[in-house]
Amino acid sequence: MNTGQAQIQGNIIVGDVEGQQFLSFFLDDEEYAIDILRVQELRGWVPVTRVPDMPDYLKGVLNLRGAIIPVVDLRKRFSLAEVEYGPTTVVIVIKVVSNDVERVMGIIVDAVAETYIFNQAEIQPSPQVGGSINSDFITGLVAQDDRMIVLMDIDMLMNSDEMSVEISGKNVEKTLQEST
Image (cartoon, one colour):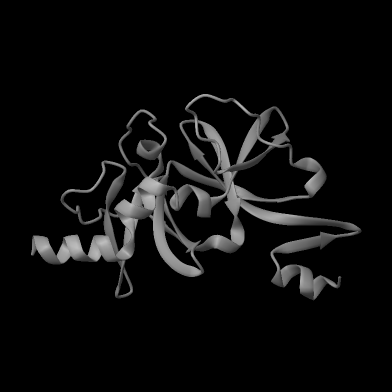
């Protein structure tokens, strides 16, 4: 595989080692990362428009150059303690694929950390914890210095049954129309 092909597929070749590039961010002092190819842009926190009758983790909607996109507060989605949004709060605008349809949405995080390139050998499988804890959206863990970075499958997270029913673009638009 040549370097041009690898970069198009989201993989980067450094020397003889091939890896995938991730954007990392913080939630409650824990570091998470997503495939950088799913990131459309980063935006500083700006208030969003609340939508009635939506789950509490759906913070509202944002007008992104004429497109109305749902914005999910990942702290609330993960049942973490609520904090005030501050100067480091960021909305990561992402592309999510569901049933071969691409949607654009925002996720609110405490802060963006950095970009990493991880090769497959560095990525450890997600531990099986059993019970009612759903870890389907965790694709792996990477030990980085003295901490662990949780790699997330943003498609799985944003397309879980309850999320896809509650925040599909059509449902948000329908609710917006009904409330005006």
